[in-house]
Length: 147
Image 1: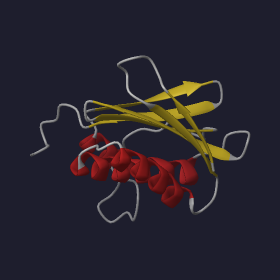
Image 2: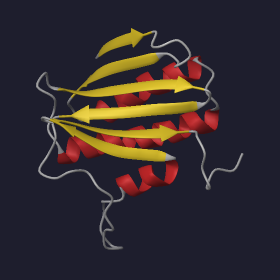
Image 3: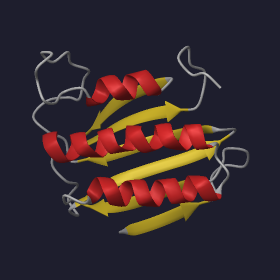
Image 4: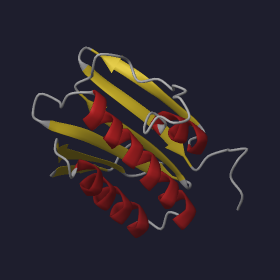
């Protein structure tokens, strides 16, 4: 795993990027890196838990539906400020653009982005010339969150 750290724009919070090898253990490695960093920054436990779940879903979707970046990795990028975590997972894209679907009740998968949509106060997809990034902001305004 390769990691970079940037000071970012003053007042914008610390920005981190990790390149996670494209492999079956990618979700676990991404969670380990991001959760360890957020806990060290003092991000509230509830938000860290939500970030961990969203990150798991985004990396799992990347492994299942897309291809790696040209260097054989998935890029995980995050920053935290005022208990809001902005998270991005980038890959080489797949056959379709990531979108929320409604699978049959008996389908064994297909609910990942519905989970992301439920936990994030904002989320979206950017397709930029062969690099697809799914992003989510966690910890901001939410009708569902109970403190």
